[in-house]
Length: 292
Image (cartoon, rainbow, N blue to C red; front, side, top):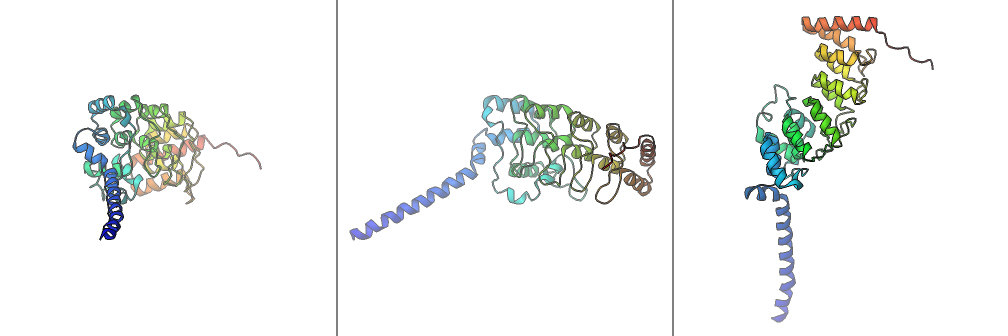
């Protein structure tokens, strides 16, 4: 009888050890949620940054400066965050008419950014709360914030288009030249072109980004803005050395794109921009390439 009792003790100890490990893991994965239910937590700071509540953000940072760069825990959200970059882009308004629902549901967007590992600063920038983002940077938030998949903050800020915010990010350590890891060689200046932000284009050029940088499809910022027919964006690039003779991998020059857009849309503004660009190309030929 004594032997049977002694044999059950190790088994019970083993069972309690398993239970303790499971409880510990559950506590780790739900720690943010548990603390948030009892009062302020890092999740509270991230949510107030997401909502753009600058006063609350300043209060929370003053009370808990150690929370400023803490990112969201996955809490099971990583699996549903199938395209981290596209979700972040949708959060700043880069969406299509066929898929606006998630963008219009702030709680869903917040959970998606949380699952992607967004910091308070990433939350604020993704929702275009520039004042809140600047407050976070002023308080010491890192400009090197990135999602779990490595997606940096700079391209999102370039899409938002506020040059004061970009300057503050740079001051806090952001690398403006860093390409996007999942976007085929896209850079911040490509994102500024997609967002049609002439001031941001000029700012990034002033920081040394190449006006003729290409992604893996051979697409330059000028190829992108040509598709939109925005005169201010086109002028910002061509007056700063954009090469009109460069072709993308489909063999198209900027003028090819503009002519096609002009015929396709019949839009008088696009036609006027195409005419201006052709005149500029005629009077500003590209420099001769050195002999091999």
